[in-house]
Length: 224
Image (cartoon, rainbow, N blue to C red; front, side, top):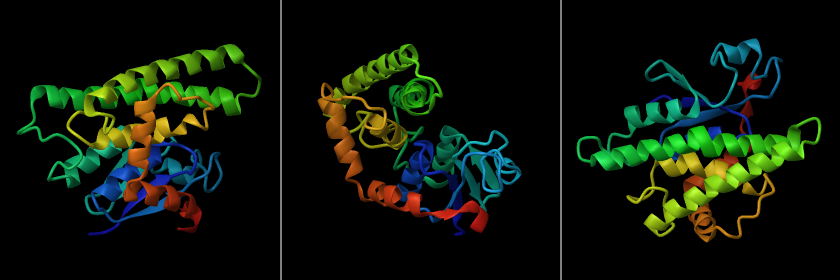
């Protein structure tokens, strides 16, 4: 099997989701790091725009099938359809209940459409906005905490071990890199003991430790 190529940068959570899935599925892959901007190694530069017209990471190239995928949910769905034949990370549609299938979809959607964007906007106003805007920061902080309230309630159903009651899945891969940015977002998660415990459990997985060590050290795309 030929190595897949994961296009990433070091600061955003979404490439880490994809790497988690590939590690757990034991897929061979290389990482290529890109910079912000429109230069030779830039996400908005002509080289990367040939891979992803939207100029964002993650993007994935699979030489085994000729498929190019981007947007983290689409990339992970592709990997699961193509390589997770034993349904290690997703429910088996042939045997899972209708509720289990819906639960997988709805919690993935909650992260993609709500928790992730709220945390992303909070990080923007904490770190990057050119002018101080406390109203915007307060709004996105409140919305992020609202999402954490929802997640804390859901984790009760599994005893804090996984987002879904059935155990660890790709849904945890979606959530972990985003929720794990709570320190970067300068949040206090003291009132969320289940989230704290879940972060510790996921963070101690060998696959997770590996990707957080290897992605920052990966080769720049322009040198690959």
